[in-house]
Image 1 (tube, protein in one colour):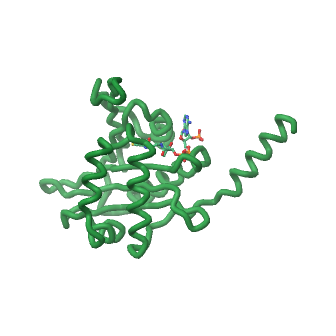
Image 2 (cartoon, helix red, strand yellow):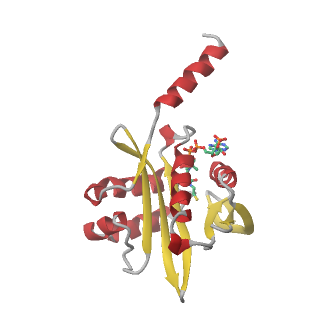
Image 3 (cartoon, protein in one colour):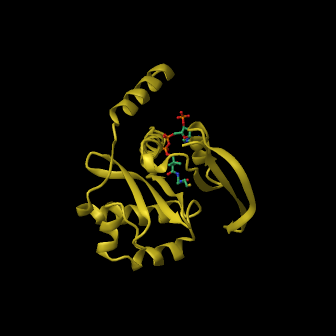
Length: 194
Ligand SMILES: CC(C)(COP(=O)(O)OP(=O)(O)OC[C@H]1O[C@@H](n2cnc3c(N)ncnc32)[C@H](O)[C@@H]1OP(=O)(O)O)[C@@H](O)C(=O)NCCC(=O)NCCS
């Protein structure tokens, strides 16, 4: 096979993957829960400390998981936007965002973005983020609220993805955590004028 044929085959393969980006029915809470655990296992450096993270997730009961998919946080006040990517009936990615009311001000806190390893590089992460930003931008209650997220310096793909969607690095917190004996920086990224 020539290099050109290889590229054509790869393109065809990518075209065949058409993820459904959707809100997940609360009935499927176990699948969402499993994906949250998988994210911690597969990408421990990207999120919170995996041991603490797993302990935190284990405390949630069925009703709380269902509530999250229904747009509610366990504190009862915060709105949640959970979007998932589904391919052939299987969840392969997710984005989770909290919209908290803090002292009369709304704050959008992006919690996580994750695509399973075998489905990366096929445009799924970008589709998830675009769907999320469209949702926020079309919500009248969220007009002019800054969209903010934290990302670790190890996650270069994520940083490139966020930049491609108009987010800018506004702050770097040097040596924010240790991972495998290395200091890892944390970046705060913002998108203005949503
Ligand atoms: C970040 C992540 C969600 C991207 O998902 P993905 O489906 O692989 O991304 P996409 O295929 O949609 O790529 C979108 C953009 O991301 C960037 N990107 C993706 N993979 C990249 C790579 N290996 N190197 C550099 N940039 C990359 C590019 O800007 C790309 O746009 P382009 O294809 O137009 O160049 C995925 O890599 C992941 O789950 N990483 C681990 C978890 C994580 O880091 N989450 C973010 C924590 S805040």
